[in-house]
Length: 137
Image (cartoon, rainbow, N blue to C red; front, side):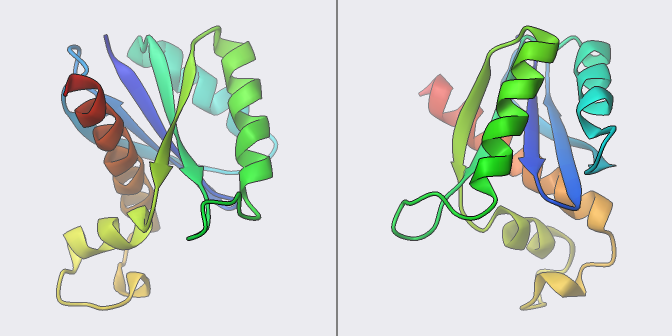
């Protein structure tokens, strides 16, 4: 089964897609967060023929929900209703920072990354890959 990974952000939403077997995640694209985001994401999910969705679950170091988690929960509910697909959470920590290091490993800051689109899509791929690895164990 093919999966779509989502790294939800208040400015950008990173998307990733798995191979048909749900083994390997690949960065896909980034969509601007806002009024049309949910329909654009739903359209991409349908175009890719995904059977399930994986979203990053954002929590602080104590394991408590952080400020963006309320928006993530609403997006999860909406995308699940719109697509009719199951939506799973995968815990995420520092995925944007890890994604930035793929492009500029010698840099200490994610701000050194020149492409926000690549960064957000790569963060979504890291979230999705973490989920797929855990499911295949």
